Length: 158
Image (tube, rainbow, N blue to C red; front, side, top):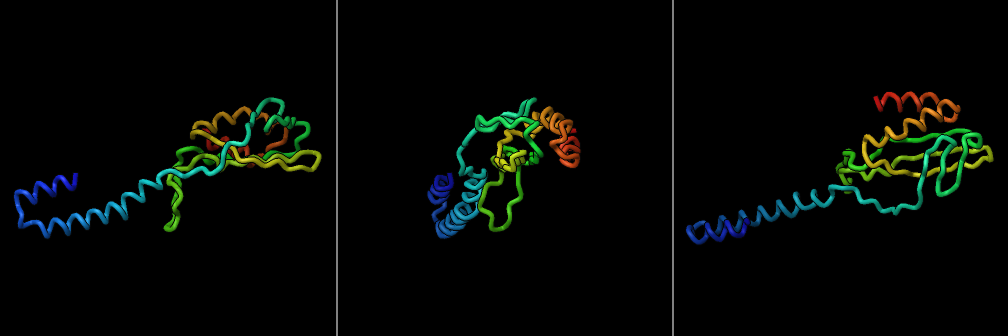
């Protein structure tokens, strides 16, 4: 479009030629240095592949076909603030995307045998965190999720 416009101007006004070349160079520099890099870094690249699956159910948690029942669990700690498409602040030298992939949520489960199971999980949208409601309610009633985490969750979904 820019080249076409310049060709028309040069055809009708050949005396503008030096100014047009300077303008094209300036415009090309602006597009190459400012606009193209911003468009390439719009979405964060998820470098990990999905490695398993997680089901939150009434009896406990099933992660990669391993059942962790509530009676075997000491505590559950989870974060739920990241979701796909969430706009995130980028610092001056941050070349990661402006929109999150939603995989920075963590669930840590401490079991009676002394093991700690920690995994990242995906939330596909802001409303997806509402699907955690039944599990959070049940985990709190069973005493596996602490009151602070439960209260913060309830405040956020209101």
